[in-house]
Image 1 (cartoon, rainbow, N blue to C red):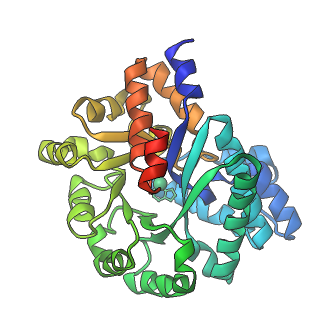
Image 2 (cartoon, rainbow, N blue to C red):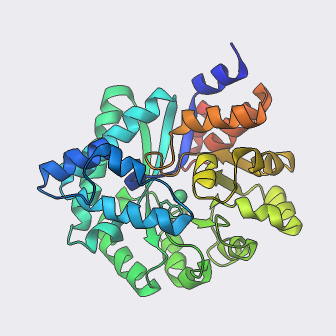
Length: 326
Ligand code: ADE
Ligand code: ZN
């Protein structure tokens, strides 16, 4: 077996996947038909052809538009099950899945409809092959902190079913400091917290996520490589970075995979790992990310082992489960 084959077949965790970003065009059209919705594209191919992004915002515009086909509990269940079925092919044994309730509640979909649907899809995968999942509620950072607080209020009746909180959407101009108070409330509820930082935003946003939001992991964090003091701190404190290589190339954070900073992050001892982010939009699930990295960097077995161990170690499962995996 080659290092690539061993990497593909290794058991692994995925800690950075937006469930709305796993909506494949085929499923989008099927749900549009089921719900009597007209998508602004004639065909699956026409929609896929629109996946040509120049930056994060150009992607988010399409991502939010497509999410409109998600209406019923069954739609969210089908979305979740489809992702988990696909993740299983890449030997993902555990997935911590982001969802964006504000994208749905703003369209009149009840918070409970979203949550129950996602849980039903996850429960089906657990019953069928023992898939392990956690749900992380993300606040949309282009909206206000007051709107995040209102979403937290909506989530409180279901708080035992939400395993953590995150921060996503348009990064530039929306620093972590904007959400300091609501994150303090999430932490006071005893929940782990994460935030996208240093994807398109500057290293200063990574410092804010660490110092003001007191996050347990940084999502992306690749721009930390511009700041040697930050790199040293992330290495010293072993802050997990949920890096998403294909996403970074497709959103033009790096012009091509060979310029990705993942080897530099690993080389300096940071606890980085790989994830798919929005696999339906970025050309691939975890396996596709592995193949693209191997083509660019020809990683050895030890590097793959480190990447997969870093994600299992950084997962929000109990210690006994984590120890059994490692
Ligand atoms: N929402 C979905 N994907 C995202 C990304 N890559 N960055 C920020 N917000 C997102
Ligand atoms: Zn993301």
